[in-house]
Structure formats: C-alpha cells, structure tokens
Image (cartoon, rainbow, N blue to C red; front, side, top):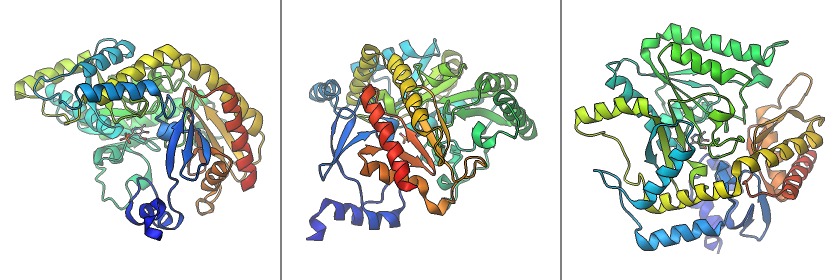
Length: 450
Ligand code: PLP
C-alpha cells in the first residue's frame, strides 16, 4: 500500500524546512539512510559524495566513531542536566575551556545555545543588554547586509537579507538596516577595483549610519563569508575598514561564524582569515560536526563586564535555554574539537581547499555556463550564467541551478544550489581523489544541463 512507504509518508505528512511544499508533494524526499566518511547512502542504496557536509555541518563526515562513542559514554553517565542557577556539568566545562583556547577573542566569556539561530538571537539580546548597561538603551538598531543568512527564528529571519526569509511572514524589519552585499562579481562597477569596491561599500555604510543616527545603532552582524547568500567572499580590505568604521561610531561588530568557524576558511575562524576582531561571535554547525544540536556565543571580556554588572543589578541575567550546555551535546562537541586539532583541520582546509579551487578552475573556468568560481579554504561557489560576457544570469523560472543540483545527484554527488550558485563545502576528511571526483561530477552535471 502506498501509505506504507516511507516516501509516501514523508510526502503526505512532512512540512520540510526551506523547501517548496507543493513541489515536495510531487517530487518527494531524498531519504538518506546511512553515512560512511564523506559518503551518504540513500534508501535505494545509491551512494553519494556529500559535497556540502550536509548543511555546512558534518566536518568529520557522517559516522565518526569517536563522536558516537563520546555520545554513548555521556548518555550512560549523565544524559541530561541544565546550566540555570549556577548549575554546570563536566563536558560543558571541557567544551568551553577548549573553545576559549582557540577563540580569537583572547579574553572571553562563553554562552551556550542549541542552534545558529539561537546563538544569533542571543548575540542581539546581549548587544541590547550591553547598550542598556552602558546607559544607552536607545542604541537598538542592528545593521545586517543584503544577502546575509542568520537563521530562521524571528530575529534570525529578520536579520537575514534574503527576500524569501521575510516574504509573507509579516516580519517587522523596522529596526534593521541592510547594508550592501560585498559581492564584487555582481555589485562591483565597470572598471572599479576590488579595493575601490570595498571603499565604496564602507562609504555607503557610513552614510547609512549617519542618516539613521549612530546613537540609535547597537551592533552590526556579519558572516565572514556569506554562505546561503551564495558563497560570497568579501573584497580585499573590507572587514578591517568595517571594524574601523564601527569603532568610530561606537557600534559593536558581531561575527556569525556558524559556517566559517572551525577551520573552514583556512584559519580557525573567518575573522582571522579576513583580519578583524569581533566583539562577539556565534558558532554552531561545525562545533559538534553537526552530530548534535549545540551552539555558542563567544563574548569579549570588555563586553561581558557591562553585561555582568547589568545582570547583577537585575538579580539575574534573564536569558538562556533548557538545553544550554547539554552534557551529551557538549561531550560530542568537546571530542570534535580534539579531533580538529589532531587531524589539523586548518591545514587540511588550506591544502584540500587549494586543490578544490584549482580543479574547479581547470574544469570550469572557461565553461560558457560559468560566470565566476570563488572560494577560500575548503569552501567554494560556482555561479552559473546564461551569458559570461554580460554576466547575465538565467531567468529564475528556468531553475538552472536546481537542474544542475539534480544532475549532480544522478552523477553520485550532493551539492546545494542557492539559486544559480552551486556551493561546495565538503567534510575535512575528504581525500584528494574524492575532491577530483566531486569536481569531475560537477563538470559533467553542468554539461548534462547545457
Ligand atoms: N548563520 C549562518 C551563517 C547559517 O548558515 C545558518 C544556517 O545555515 C544559521 C546562522 C542558522 O543556524 P541554525 O539553522 O542552526 O539555526
């Protein structure tokens, strides 16, 4: 009977995240049943190289046995406890000690949460609390950027500069200012250098800050590399200038390291790759290699001191989640960080990433459907175009990126298309020959769609 198949049940019962519901009712799910290193297997037995590490998450592949053992051991020892009212637990302490040791904010405090969205919501609340503590509660507005993705909670969605995250949800975006997208290929003007483009973005942002009034702005949030916005690597010099500008106007800089954290860009954190110091940063995804939901906000000690004073005045810091510092999630994340050191994820991202970009350029740089290949560390994007010379994209309704994504699956690899940009973000445990296979399959999938 139809209803007995898992596929039919999913089609009839499941409202999927970030999916077209009507298409899903027709096309159904890809049911993933197993994982083996960088490979996943579907319920029909097909094997794929997971070139996106799931959702930029599974840095250690899909069945790391040390992470499984860490979870099992902690489940058997203490499966649940909380961190309200001064409570703590050993795995959580192990994790924050390790996170502080790699944090680019050398003197820091760490708040724990369960997802990237929660961590970003928390950063905004911390920024407001900080400004209130300094006697500046009117500093409320937040600067985000067109093309940003910061999550799906109400605040995460409002911060996100992607139209589909707002449309039909009745979002109140009154307190958010959206700055320009740092996408040189698309937004750079004729004859403008990358440096000049960065300068123009900063000048436009300053004009926006002055028009709104610096005294009304609490913070700016930014991904070092925009992920879901299309793997946008910022132009040279952008972030140091941004930092200077925000300091000048007494505005906090919050880095969303949910995708970039833990080696992805060739340093432990994206802020190090792009040369700036944030006041706070959020991490999730790679923190536990995506094996259990866990996230964190790392706060500079200077910012923390005001927050702590305010919490003390209030009698309690009125924020936190039931599962903040969950012992099993913390134990898995702590083990993941140990493995990251042991296998040298930073070194792997640099060497494997260089190979991935080189292979992508060899295979696709002259392809008539490819406008730009961009990337940093073990993270890359391939932007498809209808006309290379004019940088003209395909009409949205042609869904060319989605066609290529489907063709990739038929050729045994999983990538993600964001419109007509294909993203590559494989697990760090990928081997050089698997990178070659991934790129070769992408080339063939693009050819299939020509
Ligand atoms: N920030 C960035 C940069 C992300 O890419 C994502 C998710 O893709 C989030 C935040 C939200 O994380 P979560 O889905 O864990 O809430």
